[in-house]
Length: 111
Length: 116
Image 1 (cartoon, rainbow over the protein chains, first blue to last red):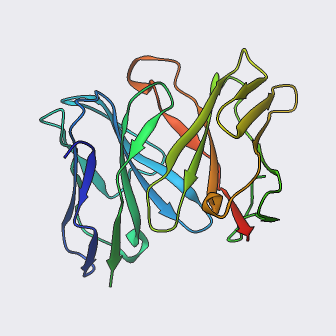
Image 2 (cartoon, each protein chain N blue to C red):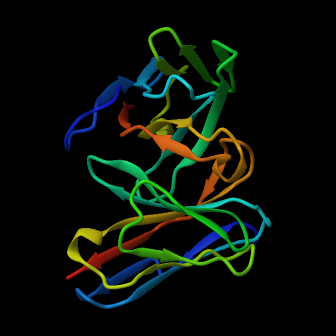
């Protein structure tokens, strides 16, 4: 199916665990983004990527790592999860200058 | 408009009314502005965009107005329907080019509730 998918959709993990959130898009868009969404803060950019093997930090990158070995995949890893990383995470890819297509989100709870 | 703290601005309208959602943006160098709609449990969805060299753009039932003098953006929805109930975000493009192309800064959102 064409589009952008995220997995898992829901995840509960413990403090200190490593967690990887997956993002896959079928359009071959060059640009991809990871956001977190918390009540009162809207969408905040964690990391973004202009192409395979090109990534850069966004507004809130601490505690996160990304990689992009293939154009279609952009995984986000929490190296050692903390409770403050409990959030809803959205992946997006860029169709036009401002037109980002968002995935359905991953709801992550860190206990 | 923008909110500070945990409470998003809210707008409650009757079905068939026109809705106006406001947004104050922060960066006078931004050259591109976008409105997104987010329904409960879903990712944001692109609605309409406008470049900084325009002051108005119309889509299907939606109009975006840009006032660069006061750094204000608004989204007008005509004949609002219950399906329009969602959180609406404005976003500005802060990337001048290169790897920052398409990079957006989002506002905190406005909750629109449409009553039948």
